[in-house]
Image (cartoon, rainbow, N blue to C red; front, side, top):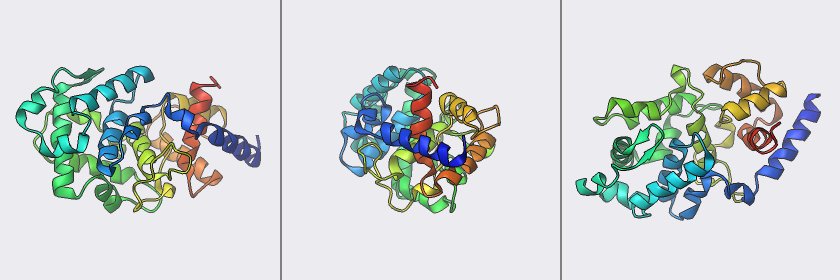
Length: 254
């Protein structure tokens, strides 16, 4: 496929999948239940953190997280008492357990109380055409508070070789405009041009079949390679192709 044909093909897929019906089967539906910016940020961050494995299970467990916080995530993060945290202990999603959940609540409070919230942290450390060093810095800040060593694995670090699929997906949710009712566009200090496509098994396999990616591992180097390819198709919004690559892989078994 020539580049013009490839762009046309992928743009069509983006238009098809970047649609409200996408929300019905995706973990992004969890933050869509909220109106307040901070509620959306926290619900989105927690839902994206556990976004690996079966999608129905992800949605069910992310919904369970919201229920354990009384469906008021920001208020819970900022106003919880120690006994409220004990109520989170039964939670489990694969290797993310109640102890990790409690640690995340404490770290989230730290982000809002001492660093001005999510958007401020990412915006401060963002580069012109990359969020990867900002993600790494976010992890450092997130774990400034005393923490369990086991919990650190649940926040990826691109500067240590990770593709950081879940945080890149989270950034797409927060930054890309809400023109089609899927992403939120609530972080105005950042631009879609700075984002990277979430890279996982599905998007990676499709990208390789389309000649957008040669590297076999789904790691930070592969993300940089995919980034370069997608920016040639649309430098202002390369991450929109997440819809095409993911949709082709998951729904069309491309």
